Image 1 (cartoon, rainbow, N blue to C red):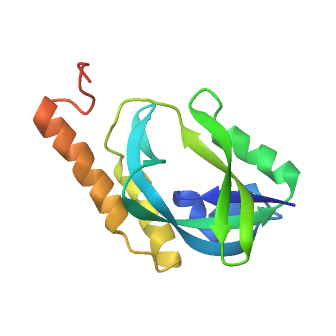
Image 2 (cartoon, helix red, strand yellow):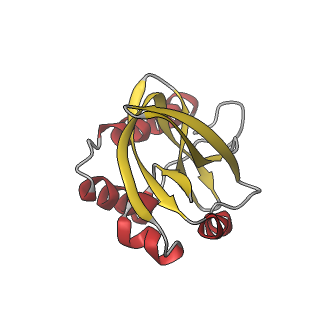
Length: 154
């Protein structure tokens, strides 16, 4: 068994179980010293974790290694990097796999992406403020630089 850390729409239990049938909700947590950001993913934007000063809600799943390979088809290698984080818990240190976006331009997500995030946050009774903060930062970049990504025309 392995552990998978999710912080996006895949926090939804039914949604993840379609891709990873062995997935069992292990725990809900808050990731300290992180920030949620939205980065370009083809025609939309997807959330990713970066260093910051917030506590970002997340879910840890326990699943079979073979199911983790299914997630690699979702989190494409050319856009996402697979990492292993050592997370401090009340019971000790837990090693969990997380998929983080490589550096792409900041961007605003489409409504359906936000809807998936909102459903996941509602399902786990998470505070939605870190999503709102990420949206505000993306909008501020656009207003300040007339683009979401300083130094480019995007």
